[in-house]
Amino acid sequence: MSSDFLKTVVETILPTYRLKPMDDEKFYPTKIKTISSKVLTESIESKMIGEKSIELWFDNPYEFELLAMDIADTIKNKCFESYQMTRYKIIVIVTVGQKKDQGVMISSRCLWDASTDNYVTVSYENQLIWSTAIVFGLYVD
Image 1: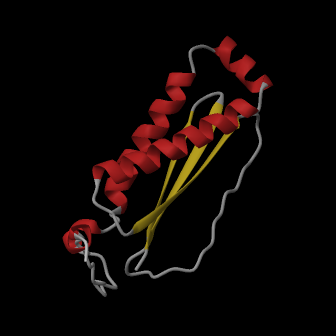
Image 2 (image 1 turned 180 degrees about the vertical axis):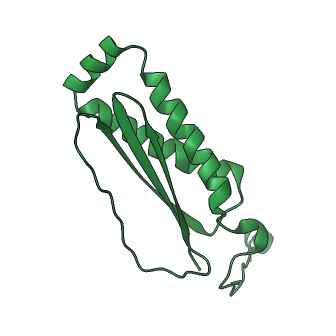
């Protein structure tokens, strides 16, 4: 046998068989709502420099799409950075639109474990624009 073969170390990781998160790993809606609201407000207000720039922004609908994707990614990253939620899958849905005397209804539906999974909804609105972010935290065994 070669000496390299004898030096090989195999690390075995046994399953934990945990079906519930630890207390410090849970998805707490109040904490996630604070992060989501702050990111949503700061992201939109940083884009809104003046009404003239906003009117140009409305001419290109892809700007809204890019803004929504940027907000969703930022919220997701901040949630993982701020809290230990290693076994959670975070799903963020952001909707951004222009205010023009119209109504919008956003709904979602899914099947989950009410003891471990949760969600948060935050909204932002001013005279020209509205936005809603829904953050789902789903526990993965």
